[in-house]
Length: 625
Image 1 (spheres, helix red, strand yellow):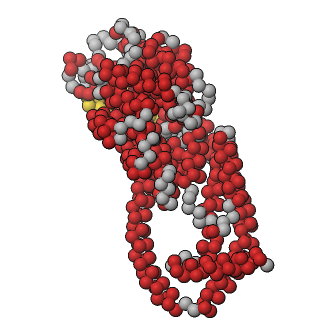
Image 2: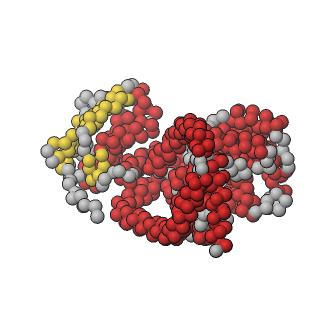
Image 3: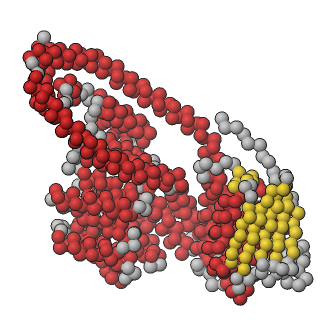
């Protein structure tokens, strides 16, 4: 009985309060002050524990359940949940979802005016934009974090956030602006301790390195490391070992990057090796992929090519999981959506203010006419509604869990349907990556060769592999079927060759290519024939810097394909015999023509014309499961 009496008096008090406060109902106030959060809080702690154990999939499922439950109850302080979802996405190397959750955490923190943590959420969002190479956007958010810290007079974290701003300015090509900002900051917010001095020396060093004043930069870096060795893993400066580890990785990366840029590989090596020796999971994926790339450079310079290949493979594997065309498009869409939502939010705010003023006037009139009978009626309705709410609350919670499980199962089924296509794309992706590894090794090797013939041979091999890599690149991109669009492929190949030869800039390329798609078994030899023919024309058809044109024709003739490459250059030398010529280029053209079972013809009276006619293969297309 006491329980119901206490409910009675509480509801009565809530009703009178709501009459004074405005349009919020007594029932709303009561429900919001008595949310059933015990099970939600328990699930949230469970998700935190699973995230700490890197059981990412399980933590994500639990966090999404918590998020849905909080939203259903009208709870608005969701920034911590979004922050944990962002951390889960980061562990999965999923920058797109990490960005989405970081934006949501900022929106939530701003909506509830979480002044204690706003700078933290701004800085985290800024860091994701920096990882995505969107440096101007990153600078905008880290400036907001710095302004917030100064407003709150919390300056211990100021120089850490300032480091990211200076990084953004440098990467955006504005080191002078970075130095001006630093000099102003030293006056307005002088360093408070030794840790701040470490950051300050690093920032000046980065600026001067970007301006190619390497001697001055190295002086600042040495001062940075001298002070850092005092603070390193010192409990006075680091409450948590994880933060000390982050700084250890960061300062070693700074020195390694600097020495690589000035080609002092011996000095860079020890800094890189120390970080790569850390246990798995200690280094952020975005940072780890950079360290593998740096170790690749060091190994290539020292001639340790086996190790170089291994590190380049690891670099590409992490890079491909972080960045691809689809994610880049999604991130752009997400940024546009965020900006659009902000504008719509401002419009809604103005409309809400107008409505609020109108409602307030109505409430003043309404409150004059409220009677004791009306209060009693509200009281009865509130008690009845509350009883119904309590009875349904448990079943609603169970239904939400069931619905979440059903949604998860649906997602799994959709994933199975897409698995076949994904696996096929992954095969082409890996072939393309392996070719890129070989191309990169050839590039590295050519930097250490003095023999022009050897450099020339390496360049030709690189171009042939790039012609094949372009085909596999197109096959693994989402939205492409099992065949190659030859118009798009030839455009890309010509563009690549134009950029590879300085002499190609004075040559006009004309494409007359029909809408033809070929299976990979025919596209690869055709691409290599195109590569050899175009390369030979660029090198030999236009001597002494003369200008000219190259025409590429690809037409369909019934069930056959005609390829013709024509130039208006000097033509073939007298007595040239196509079948008797044993140059590598001509041997490859004949070999690939035989592979296509085509008829090859060449003439060179006025310029050179190479033509090939072959039958198009039609592979059956399997229906998707």
